[in-house]
Amino acid sequence: MKGDLFSSRHMVQPASAPGMTVENAKCIRYVVDGEMHARQGAMIAYRGELQFERKGQGVGGMLKRAVTGEGLPLMAVRGRGEAWFAHEAQNCFVVQVEAGDEFTVNGRNVLCFDATLSYRIATVKGAGISGGGLFNSVFTGHGLLGLVCEGEPLVLPVSPQYPVHVDTDAVVGWTAGLSTSLHRSQSLGSMLRGGSGEAVQLVLRGEGYVVVRPSEATPAKAQQH
Image 1: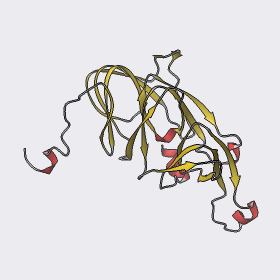
Image 2: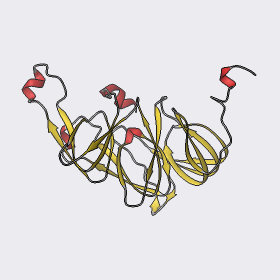
Image 3: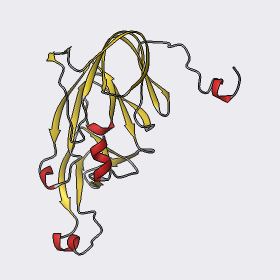
Image 4: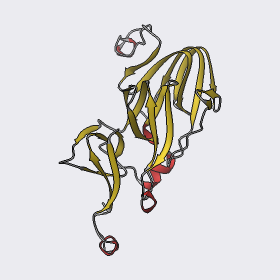
């Protein structure tokens, strides 16, 4: 067969080492030799002897079935082989989490991660006044975390002198050392009279970075994720 489809641009090359790599802008490859974790339904292809389980024994006990505000369940992938992960052709990125780090990420942006990473589910204080998107996973430990993002993400530095306000539907995640709160930008009366709709923002203060995506999830789309 000939043609651009079968060129080196699209052809999968042999893996060089176990673990996670970006196959292309829309897909992550994971060479499994033991165990890793991934978003349910995100596996698009695999080869080798792999098992996919909704629940299983993980580090420190039973693998948590992490459910975020968008209803994101996780699965364990075990065995030896290769698997490719993607979600709705969104852009893929890999974050290296090191010992002592803490990275908070919106569940809708989680694609896959090393089993050496630990996570807990946390909410932003006062998030009950918002429409969702503030039910996050906090990752710690040492390993790689694969993320997806609609469009090219923006990474904004946060400093004590310059706190950052982020739309709650656009936030992807933020690093350790940042405190969060919610801020109302207009009164309820203004909203009812046809205000801008940018009523509640997430405010991040301290020293670190916040990642945002260049799009907002509509309520109908958020329910599909």
